[in-house]
Image (cartoon, rainbow, N blue to C red; front, side, top):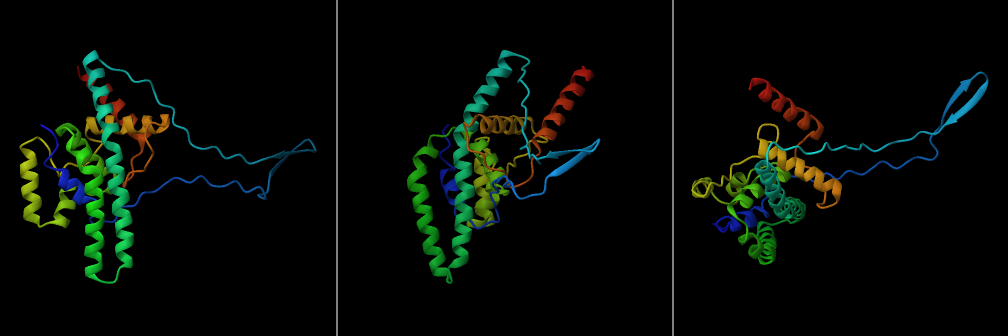
Length: 236
C-alpha cells in the first residue's frame, strides 16, 4: 500500500511553528597574525606554526551475519536516501516560516502567508510523496523527528485539534505507521543503521549533511552497538 494517507500530514507539518534550528558547521578561519609557539633547544630557537586539523571519522568496514542481513541493509539504505531530502525540506521550511511569521504583525497576514507556503509545497511535492511506500513513510516520520525535534503527531496536533491528531495516528496504526514514532538510534537498531547510512552518505557526498535537532554522537553510537553485539554473542 502506498503512503497516500499521510501526504497531507507531511505537507501540512511543513507549515507549523516550532523551534527547530539547523546548525551548519563552519570551520574557524586561521588567524595568520596569531603568535607562533617557539621552542628553545640548546640555545637554538625553533618556530612552530599552529596547525588546526578538522575532525575526521574513519568508518569501519560493514560486516553482516548473512546475505539476508546484507540485503535488508541495502534496502534500508535505498529507502533512507530516498526520503532524506523531504525531511530536510520540512525542517528548512519550518525554520523559514517561523522567521517570516515573526515579522508579520497581524493574524490575517500570517494565515495568508501560511496558506501560500502550504500550496507551494503541496504543488511541488505531493505527487512525489504519494509514491512512497508505507516503509518509506515510516522512515520519513522518524527523520522528520531527527531534523525538527518534534514528532509528526505533535506537528499535526499543532495544526489541528488533539482529537484529529489522535485519529490520524489511530488510522496510521492500521497500516503499521505511527506518527508518534521518534528517532532513537541509541535504543532502536534500525534507527542506528539509518544514522550509519546517513553519516556514510554525507562522507561520500551522496547526501547533503544536515545536523539533527538534538545531539547524536556517532562514535559513541557505534561503540554502544558494538558492545551490545558482543554481549549478545557472549550470552549465546
